[in-house]
Length: 85
Image (cartoon, rainbow, N blue to C red; front, top):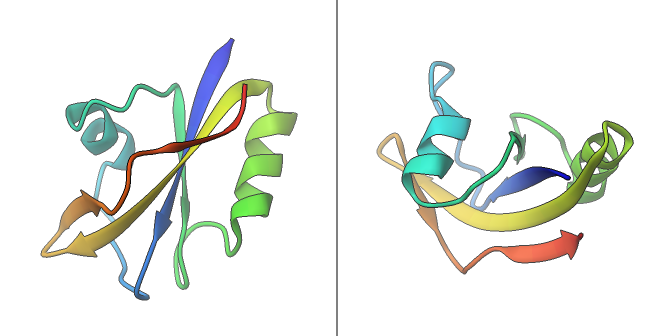
């Protein structure tokens, strides 16, 4: 089963365009085949849209990570939460 991770950015922060979200998540120990971003100005606008996108692409194990973007770095606020799978 393919796994997906949704990263929800808090506080209206944005990541640089060249930020490799998948690689950074893997460096932090989060395994996922695909990562989608939810933020006020980047990626999907709502978590349910990102979840639906991953689910319809065949990703069964989907988790949500709430994080802050500070100084071009991603900081998790809480451990990831399983949305499905």
